Length: 359
Image 1 (cartoon, helix red, strand yellow):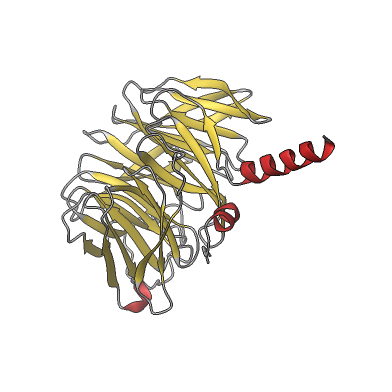
Image 2: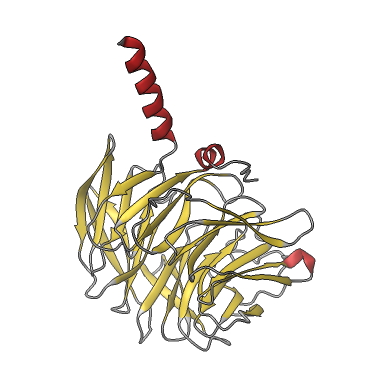
């Protein structure tokens, strides 16, 4: 009898370690979400104008607070790891920066000066500014003006011809990549001379006046660009389009563009998880792995959920690093239309899929 239970426990443990961690947090779709620095708290939008803050206790996530300043659906959330501030943006054309005030969160309105819905938001690496994309064909770069004790914004408008759907920051805190509905990925300078020193030259260019378009790349298949991601060193940028394509440009290789038109349903989000590997998610409800091989070609590598019953019950909306960095990701998380936030451990994936090596 004892041997039976020991074998049963061993099998149960083996099965459990091969299962991604699933957080059943809401019964509605998750539009956007972000974790705090130690992953003990989570902010998400449950497909309405609210932001729900959850805290982890044991294996359970408990609702701690509901943030209710926005009047339309919240489209973007980002949680600053060092300053512990949350920034949110919404279809109501506003953004708020939230600071802890005791056990509560205190909002500060940010004047975005835009006349269309805000679609995405992201803190810069140094957390001294953030970028907001919107439907008004512009990106609003927001920074704190200490003299007047408020957040102000500057607009990047050059060459953007449609709604901005995605933003990612270069590690130098100056450049941003944008993806938009005009089928373009662009690299802009978001240098704010009032708060930062003159930037050093990069592989993307050296003249970085605010708003300068450093590069523009066409998503040749004609799909909206849903997500953009700089590599850890900032020398590569990847993006995914609604035409089920993934593209990568390497600034150290004369900005040569590599593209794969996949046979899958459209991708909604992508992220680098190593210097050569990119994970994508979207309408297929399955994470896919692509990589830059030894010859410098972009290739499909693996399907990351091969079980008959998939972890996700509906389309994914996003993917982000959960543990580690874009250079050495320990785990990544996905969220989507089924209300699940799923944590995928890299070592577990490598162990459960024969021949898989993410490096």
